[in-house]
Length: 286
Image (tube, rainbow, N blue to C red; front, top):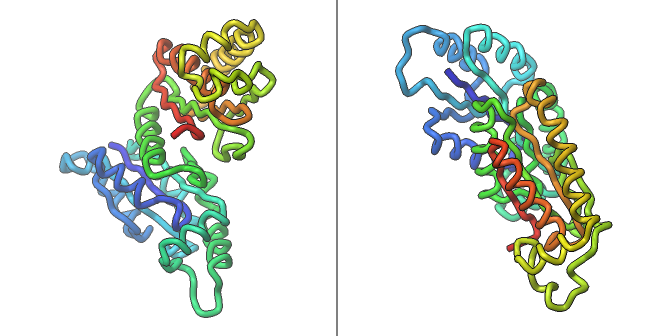
């Protein structure tokens, strides 16, 4: 029996995440009041249950009574005592991005009213949801995440939570475009030789053989690659022991086109061979 409680800020992608769960054969219920969620948990704990309720996802947002929201951690603990694998997935987004999204879609924030601006409504929502954010099994920052990436993150988290090995998201990025917000580790490879300054390599990426050959001809590149790999191999088991099912590792160079892409692709191969599920994202590549 698995129950996923989905929460987060309005505009952070909860509908996309819930639809993804539905595609994965979860029975989905959106904006269920917590007093009804308690009844649902009690019902899911019964020995005889319709097969379609073995995987259930419930959306919970700030429209729920604040006093009830504070009881959610206790409700999750109750579910787990009844043998239900209950986990909370929380979606977060920076305020500036939320304001832009609401402006683009012209949708009304559920907490806005005549005397409360959009930014004030977002701040209030953060405050209301803070008690449950800290008990989330997985928190995804969608500030720089598109619809397809969010779907992959949700799928990867669900598969990872059922696997003895931690699932990994490896992401390349360019520092000149900003550091990803929702990551566990960030590695900086800007100190390595840059293919950008080679005219024949400049239009290529770290996935192209000519760039790979150029980088691997430099001992510092191989040493950096091996050091990152050894560090992750040494510490991933500790995260698995601690119950973590998902790790996000970002590797950045200046533009996010050559060195970081090469590192991510190399690590992908090594960790897939070790039996980990790996999702790769190259943020700056089309």
